[in-house]
Image 1 (cartoon, helix red, strand yellow):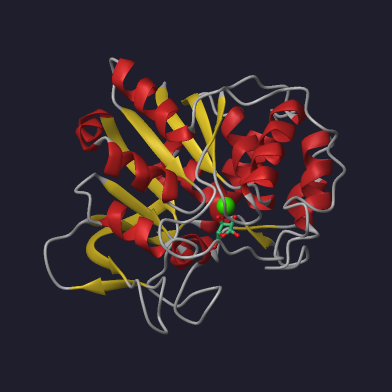
Image 2: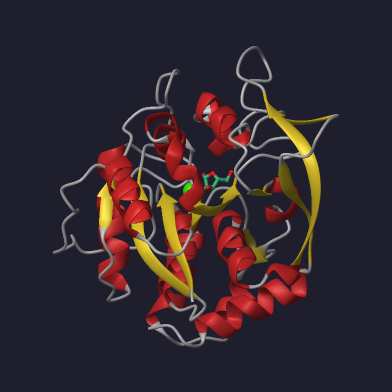
Length: 294
Ligand code: BDR
Ligand code: CA
């Protein structure tokens, strides 16, 4: 099994990504860390615990960074006021572990015999903070597979994708860290569509919850399919053959009108960028996973 840490800010598509991740036998999810992002840290953390309850999972959750490194926290109404509008999740009976996300990652990485993969489906603040505080920990990180960025235009501004825009300084630190990185950006996630026809085939409560929440996701419509941005990062870790990736040198713009933009520049590659997705294989992967879910 692939040992992973998931950094998340639920988020309707984060909830879906976590849900499918729980049912992929290839993954051993050791820790989930939360942070500011789609909504504030209080909500993203409470939402994460609700998702665990919904899927009947017990995995340590550590609360992380409340704000970006430099800029003020932002939020969007893309996922509704709760961050997971459309479905009435009961309050969770679970609690977070006492350690801050950065400390929890450090102790887990330090004590692990194997290197751990980090799947990032929110802003990169927790990971940047880990690298700033404990640079020696890099040797314990297998790679970072991140949903974020774009080489073909943004979704919050014409240039920037949300997860990078929400903390561009953190993203820059991660992109320049020398770690092995895979960037799963809008270039592929805009094409990772799941809609009513994919969900209607399934009769379980996960399909019911996805139908209710995806219908509230402002980025798309259920008829044509809603973009599963975050899920693509999970899919890549279990089934990389579904994507085409190309090594590139990518830099992050941290000021001016294009703040939060990921830009291809010349030079030594620092990241493998997903530039293609097999849409049918992705749909089948999702459907096969969903058929095994609660
Ligand atoms: C990213 O932004 C968030 O709104 C989604 O959860 C995803 O992580 C897509 O740009
Ligand atoms: Ca997210």
